[in-house]
Amino acid sequence: MTQITLENLAHSYLPQPAGPEDWALKPMTLTWQDGGAYALLGSSGCGKSTLLNIISGLLVPSQGRVLFGDRDVTDLPTAQRDIAQVFQFPVVYDTMSVRENLAFPLKNRGLAADVIAARVSEVAEMIGMTEVLDRRARGLTADAKQKISLGRGMVRQDVNAILFDEPLTVIDPHMKWELRTQLKDLHRRFGHTMIYVTHDQTEALTFADQVVVMYDGRVVQAGTPQALFDAPEHTFVGYFIGSPGMNLLDAKIDGATAHVAGTRIALDRGYGALQGRTQIGIRPEFLRLGQGGPGLPFAVRRIEDVGHHRIVRGEVAGAEVNVIVPEGQPIPADADRVIPDPAHTHVYVDDWRAQPATQERAA
Ligand code: ADP
Ligand code: MG
Image (tube, rainbow, N blue to C red; front, side, top):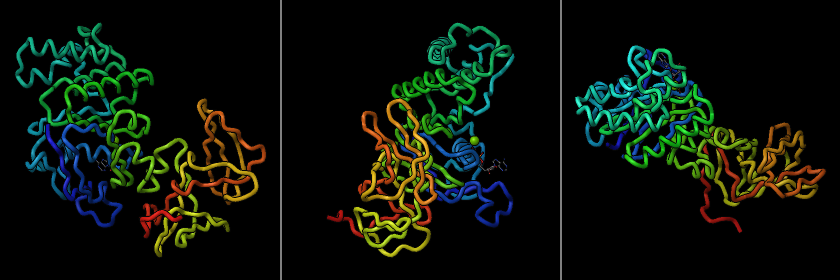
């Protein structure tokens, strides 16, 4: 097991990259702590697999270094990195039985037969395939193959890290939950560094202690699920995490006041002069509905009951705004205002969260 550091890493698939759009990964420096359970979250095409393949050694980065502890492994082949990787599309040997498939990485390491047998039955249990251990992989369904592939990733205990690249795509939702629980359990018992790639926030938030969010080839924020919820560093994090995501409104910022669609909104800190596109971001959890009085003019479009709360969908000056109303709290019949909670109103400049100029909260 080891700490993994990516040092000034960047990658382009082109031989002679010119503009920023030629880089699948923009320069990044990032440390994955030994024993961490990480999710790597972002939409399709943002560079997650590229990053994973660089860590495992399937890909040599165009720039920068990969360190395992203090050791530079940038040019080391996968076989010498002691990394287990589970791919999005299962890699299963059709002519082998399930048991042989699971045993394969251990046989390769020359482990004793009884050690292999014990470990294989343990992993078979975890992925729910004890009953079919002696079946040939060929006739099995796609989700069974994905489970074998997952099991093969978990079977070695002497690895530096286990990398999962969207490993549960064809698994049904209940089984997904079950397998994710098993992965967490595996992490708790053996403490391997795990990096779990997904484009699904629920998967990321339920699996990981730390979530690394990527957008357009960049890591825009790495932190606990709570930190990503409380203080999204980039509008993408605000919008991608949360359901519905953060509301964003164009605003002019003047000290501790935001001017939005002709209305003044109080912020709890003051900001200095800001250059660029300025917006305020407020999660739907931190907007309150009002009728007349203070707040932003709000037009209700639709109310959705999602069980433990309701989502009121509407508009502020033509921009979509959602409000979450907790169970048991009334929705005013002619709600026409939304009132932001100043403690949870963030300011963004060109999509990045601005730091207040004053650390003291305004009185
Ligand atoms: P993700 O896993 O987040 O969906 P990828 O890392 O697969 O994203 O892709 C990042 C970008 O690099 C995309 O624009 C993709 O088209 C491009 N890309 C991925 N693999 C290759 C490749 N082998 N050759 C050229 N471009 C690639
Ligand atoms: Mg991918």
